[in-house]
Image (tube, rainbow, N blue to C red):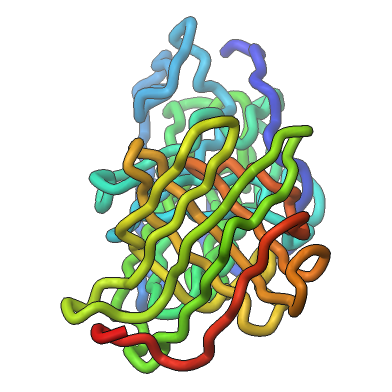
Length: 329
């Protein structure tokens, strides 16, 4: 098979706990863990077959899938999901790859556009690709599926198809070489609505910061509950002379993990702008006057535009309100 390589997108690794596997080597099987479940899904291909490179990823010749480890997400709600990825090393707790499930894509696989890794090793050896989904927050149930594409009759080493997973910390440990292809799918179900008592809100008046030498203006409000249980909000992000206007937020609340999560009363709001772009906005009211105290972070279609950990504003002010804002407010 071809040794043609695509670049590795993330480098780092860790030890993961996972499912026990048959030490006898590759076999056609599906393994189950305690609920929620996860599975190894073997795809034994006839001798001489090429690997599939499925799910619509581009390829220039039939063997481009050789050695690929690919990452996909299935979610019943729209949002951006972040993953820490490592190859033959140690994970560092920092997101390397994001997948955004847009409105209309709920319940269907959304795959990262390029492989996480493309192994160049012979069949008897393996690279180790570790994947951790960073905490998506409360009220989520996660399963992990690993599709294994391999060719019957190839002399694989003993670890080749003994991939592991653990649904509780949302991890997968995948073995890869140039004679197989793996697809790892994290399936997330949002199982309940947020506590209705969490109805605080935050307002932000014409926040100004600078990204790449260009002024960015953020203004609006988010938080509280409408009579129909939808989220009160209305905000704009004016970035590179494009107005990303979100009028119907899909989520609002405390930040469970990632940028600004360690800051008391930091808040995240997500939604789809009127121009169709998925927006995630994180804000923190650090005190008065706002300049040099309040911090903002945002991403567009899963691509972070601010500094990775957020950045201070240069003008404007945001105000966190701990009281509940209900339908009449």
